Picture: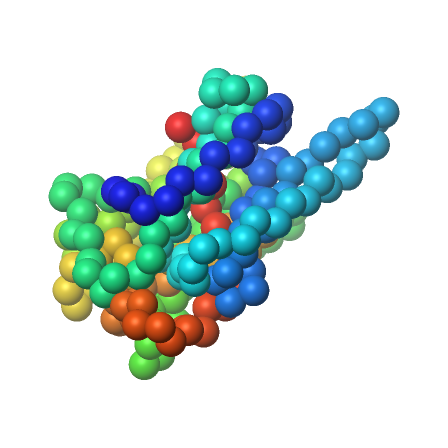
Length: 216
């Protein structure tokens, strides 16, 4: 995301998967959670940051650099303008893991779609017996869900990859796509039919949402 405001938070001293960032209070605050271990006990360290204006998930990017200042989180946000960004080439939307479920009859995890008048919502289906990683990529009007998992084979393991592609009616702007954290079930990818409304002095309804943390 070019321009906008950058909120750097340093000295995290933890892994990216131990950090959570959530947009709360109708898009007016960030809530940052870090998993801390003290004397062998795990606890959650939580901070909240006020924003100078209302933002939507489509106007926020979160990146974590473990080698910068003992682990630095950069939250970059901008005021919605109504002008969309068209990605050039492939644009990585998010990555996530669907945790294995012992005894599942599913051979692999597939992506389902819900649709209404406002958006398309892509949701991982039931878990399989294997941990499955997904990389979600936008390539033109195609949204690709690239999966990978490993299965036992003889004395070793076999890696299996796959791709599920959905052709959208037209190429969306980057700002039309948001991500919802589903915990061990992975993440839902939401493609909104319209761009977020431009800031015009009137607040929009912004639901609370966990934000994707990209490792850099």
